[in-house]
Length: 559
Image 1 (spheres, rainbow, N blue to C red):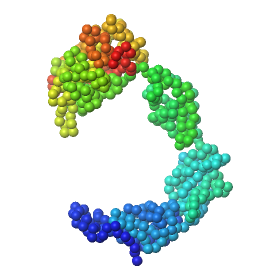
Image 2 (tube, helix red, strand yellow):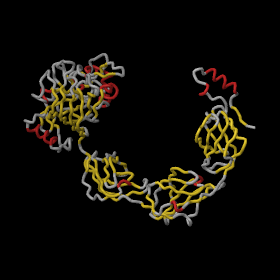
Image 3 (tube, rainbow, N blue to C red):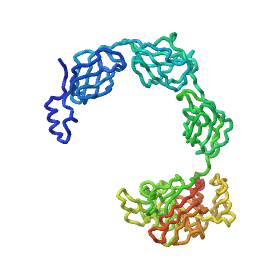
Image 4 (spheres, helix red, strand yellow):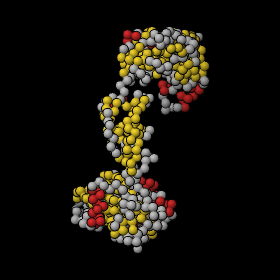
């Protein structure tokens, strides 16, 4: 006679079926499971038990002697298969679904045979990390395969990949030495036991330890890809610098490439660090160089960035660039990410002549940024956010329904928060050309108070007169003679512009060298001069450039 207990009455199941008129009868749980028979009636770990009965489709769990068993296959509503788990005890089989559980009438009897290993199936030499198939009898009862190096007391368990009655497949684990023995753990009915080491199969484990042959370690820059040469480099798990893992970009047996990272405790200039390799599943490591020198530049450098003048009709819609983060921001980010202070105060953010009207904390919370706009007069100009209320309102973004919105909102007129000015560097002017040449020759390694001193009294920066800096510059200034108003053109440009970022005191119209917080150098390299909607306005133009930016504020300037 079958024994089962229902959590809910059959009547409740009927009510549920009626209530859920959109769900078919077949998809509803109708009753607790019913067990009619199972076979075999005895077996060991790994044995598959076929159970027949009723309402077996919806079984969610099974136990043998109170130990959770694996649901292998639900053949039909009348048959399913479970697998005997490790640690199972002699006892009844229990099946459960959402309505209840059922116990079998009969008892499944656990057997605890010892595994018999066919030692001839184990090669004399093995390679660490490879798969190993071991044959024998009762291999399904094995719970662990252990590799122990000669002279070492504690062994290492191998990962079991698959097993059945006649064979087991494992991944050969880390071992400390080449010579090792293999033992097997299994449950004898009362406790876990391990086969004897004295009669265990003996093997030679080929460890293939990586060897780095690189001996010269020149000074590298943050972000460089460094190459190591040697043998068995494909066995390396990690490259670390001062314990911090590096990104491996490519790896084979004789060559490994990794990306040189920046660390929080690095200082500007040369940092002497320790370069190490980690291998054998992270267990072993060796120092490759304890004088690996990483150079952190004294200047932020952003290469080949692209922004769009207002971004109308341009899918990228990334018009705003911050020289501090190196990111060209999508127009839709302006309100919340780029300049939330400006969006909050609109035309009240500044007064005329780039004088912030917000608190110092609010001003400093916005990172400096600039943008290009294509005005209707046909000029493509670079702009300071705080330079005018009439520029930001011309930038748009589109929502998921392709509706167009001004970034500044319906009110339109809006000052941006950061105060910037620009100075075109004319290669015909010696002081200007000296700065241009540093960038062009790759020797612009520092922008600081020493290399670019500001003389407020003389209104100069590095001897360059900055009394003529402006809120905006048009292509007629920074690319003279290159573009014609009303004509599209896609061309390289080699133009350098100094960028000045001011503190909360803003621009002093009587002395534009005062209140400068940081400076940078913008190298415009390419412009796709595109006209918007058959007008003269190059609003959809793409500008590609490099940007050099000062990493630390001028110390004499209060922020």
